[in-house]
Image 1 (cartoon, rainbow, N blue to C red):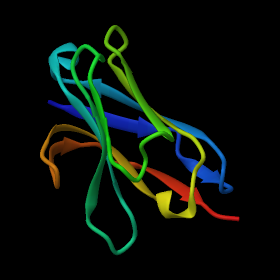
Image 2: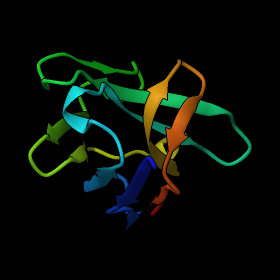
Image 3: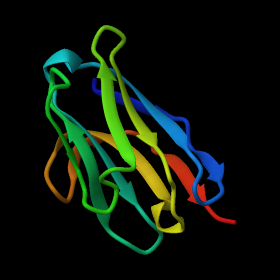
Image 4: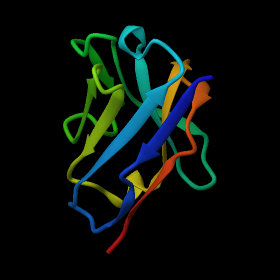
Length: 118
């Protein structure tokens, strides 16, 4: 079965950085477009970024463009999200997702919490 396990979250001050990882199994990761989505307290799911199967094409939400980088290691079946210049409004639970629309994912992991505060 599809399994997605996120890690790497934590608490940082504004301006800080984190790298999130997502270990994938149970499907053909190297052929899959992969997504990062987030949900802030009291808000709906927001698509943050996605990457095509080869890693050559990416998308970033306007709110994170220029600050976040998405990448993948198909040999290790790991998806990454590098977060830089973090802002308090980036505070959310971050999920990696497989088979996602703009507002939901058919598969997502348990999430990793990112908290940005001074």
